[in-house]
Length: 112
Length: 109
Image (cartoon, rainbow over all chains, first blue to last red; front, side):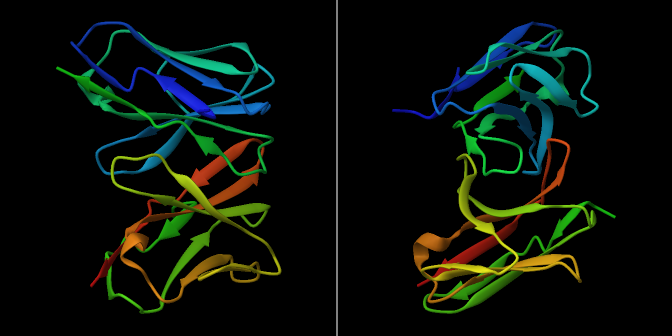
């Protein structure tokens, strides 16, 4: 039973395309997150959702649009992909913001 | 100044050694602190939460010093399998979570 699952695991696409990454958690958590980890390995929060409501948007370009259809899902859609978007994107969830987070195993996005 | 700062290392230690990492945080309102471990090309995994009273889990001990705004992680009797990047995390509230850049540890036979 995977607690936080992301799909796809690998995504290779061309500049200018639009792509989506899906995330689902079966832990019953209220809070979900998207992180970006770049080539320097720095893990940076992009979005935080609580009970389907957007709480944090950390100066992410508006080409990135998260959508939470319900508490268990937080998907990330990216428009007009750029070279600088190449990174590993991690989804995570927690019971609440002060509790430890459980991470999905990441989506490796490569822009050609 | 970064909100959470860690020495990037790498720390190269022999098996059986004791190694300690420190991490400083800038927001005095931070309430929750954690140490995560991340293996190469894997997701971060919780190692331990850090409480004001300090906590210990086997060979791992975490301490919090609010006055000096730092947290520490001590690993005793290092194993080869401890080789990883250790991420310090602070939650200053408001649903925000700040990860440090990580400290790399290599344990050698």
